[in-house]
Image 1: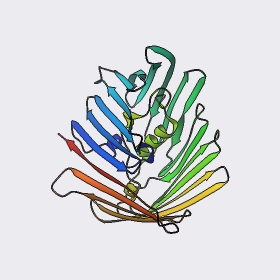
Image 2: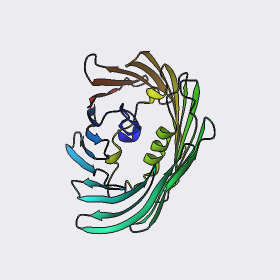
Image 3: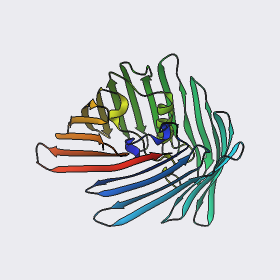
Length: 320
């Protein structure tokens, strides 16, 4: 679910609190994904995620830790519990920029290492790593934002993937986003286009998306992306109306879909969609009044076969 970029945006900030805690679960017929994420403004973070798969009843668990910043430095790590594979690195900050050095391990054996860093200014971004783990690996992206137009290009040599974004960042006004991804190894390509009347996305959000897609911090090698927590709902791209079109091309199999979202009022969003596989989808997101909780339900039905499916989410964020 994390890769779908849905849910609360802990990575782009929850208000101006000193500490935040998020807990949530997403359940479908195939699995249940549970995440707990604690963060402090001093840089500390502790995250745990568990995915249970049905009907096999298998569990995949991961924990991620970041230390508080000690001057210009911070230690980070992610561990997959079942295999005991890990990713450990140290960051050195210089304002909004940083360099990082780390190692990749499998149980009690170091299998590789990497060095990289990030440059972040008002209209330019660069996030890149180079490492070795059975083969050399280069991953990262570059982004620019001339005026209110965001442009980025990134990739991952280990996964043989490319990603790109073209988007407007004029907040509160009509806008458009195009997200493109290509898996050159498996010959898979996908894209999304967002149209909204009151856009909410900015450079920080898009840079975070590129980080996830390219896997900087050497993610998805010996461990996953648990340090990233979860992203935001597609419906959040606009404060009122939005339309999302998506395309997927796997070898010669083309799939198309479209969804429309309407924020009936703050904290209450309705969505409906249809795709070329004759599946209709209905979504409802709502904050639960007088609580820090929120809920989301997605149901779908294949209009040809009558098959149905559903997913549901319940979670909340606390700050103090």
